[in-house]
Image 1 (tube, one colour):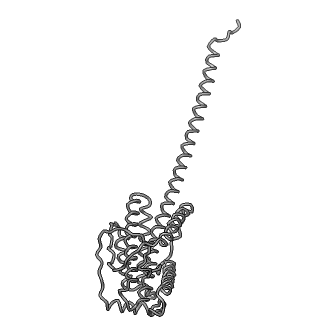
Image 2 (image 1 turned 120 degrees about the vertical axis):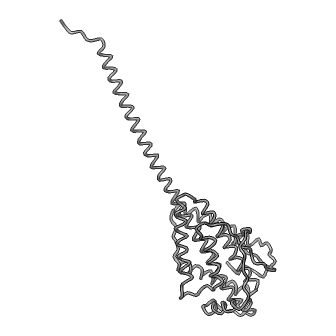
Image 3 (image 1 turned 90 degrees about the vertical axis):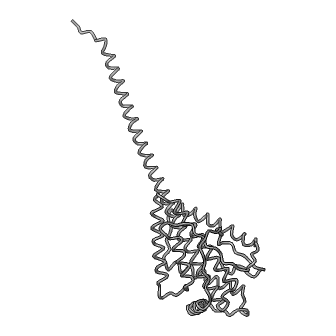
Length: 296
């Protein structure tokens, strides 16, 4: 008797083929899903790394550029004091001193903002690391016996900077400006110079984000820039305060020692720390057209 085909066989075969196809599709989809998840995870890791790199670069830029601005003003102040070495209360000296105070207030605010913004993030480690490096730079600058560039008054400002901006926990501490009889007038030319500087700053930050790299300056590089700033200040003083009116000498170590000796003989005015409004150090003023950008 010839065997008859089982009526269930085609159904069973079709069922097996269906299950195989379904299992294959399922495995393919699962592998696809795992691959996509892996790709997404790798993308997120790369994106986070890029954000961390940008964050680190910006922190370094703000910390060191702010410090450079302060050092520039201190060296510039030395040039002004040496220029008016026998006129301790000259309005130009008071103006220079107030610019330093403004910069100290700005530094304090910058470091407070960096502290709050980077709290409990990877940026906090970067900030602490760069602050520690700045403390070392400051220590070397203040104890460099071969470079008596800054007198005791300027070293005192550096101590204020260390206390107010490089503390482990920064609090807002704003120093009041020194009172003077200078009449400040708005100068449109000053504003016209400031606005391009702001645009240039924005462009610098944009380039830093793209490069994701910032060159941390050495102590000698910081000093070199400050000395260039001092020379520019002296040059502007020569232009705005002619030789026939003042006893002029270019900045030198002997000048600094003489200046310090004169300052020690004159009464010192102590500044109390309190909250005050933050002003931009980029703005310069004029008194009856007497001051014409003697400080850059």
